[in-house]
Length: 377
Image (cartoon, rainbow, N blue to C red):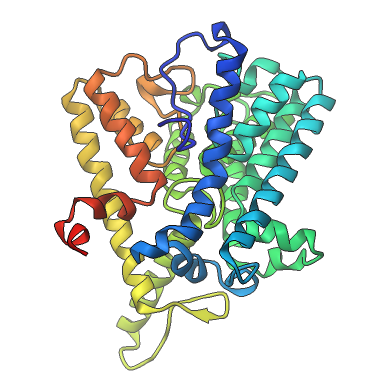
């Protein structure tokens, strides 16, 4: 479950002792699951009427609102092509930095899938290479971007990045988070500015894209840094990316909706619509996003209670749930970046595995199965 949902949480205590065949299989499950979920959202979810192309079009307006090709199969092939191309480029760049071909393949697979499985116990931090960390930071960031924008950029339409409001908001979140954590870590954690910036940027991008790679134990950072990272865990990547979480587009539209509601209190007769880019967002889509947000928080709270009930402490219980529900991997407390999930009781592992599935399939897709009316249809 952790592999195909690209979560990256592990119960293995000594990864480096595993045979290379199993290490490659772990990485391959994440690589397949990364693009697989995008193809699923385009091809299968519309049949349930709860997502897919309808949500894709609503959340990604402007140049990427429509299918890249008339047939959904052609769109899937194009996205897979972009996915494979970026993976290949990353492999070459990682090998140029001294990483072996085997490690390069594994880390490229799990970077582009925003999965986070590594071939080393200390994750990417085991290499101690600034070059490798910056390369992986770049490709984690790219993996958190809508892949339709990558395709359009390859066609020469690079300006579509700047015109896409979701991408700008996503970039702003990464930039602000990196600056804040760099400032908070200044002096006390890392004496050198470049090292501080490198570690801070890596962890911010790793968390917000739900990749889960680690180069530092962020539990040793100031508490406010940890709060910022936990907040980032709820956000996730852009719509149409391999990232998990609630998605940047939903968070952006929630802020816009709140702004409109406050504006209407001040100007009750004014007519003001929620827009993303130049397009107004349908009320049905907005209601779906509000429902998703409420359900997401409800699942988080309920699962946290269960994890506390099986014996986990408060920070670990909540962090383990958001780390799996947002498909991130590491959390805080006993499931932090230098720990794993091996100590979690068996029932707790089942609950967290179910959270991985819920988070990766956007909640509605799984929960709709428990309603008798769905089966009667």
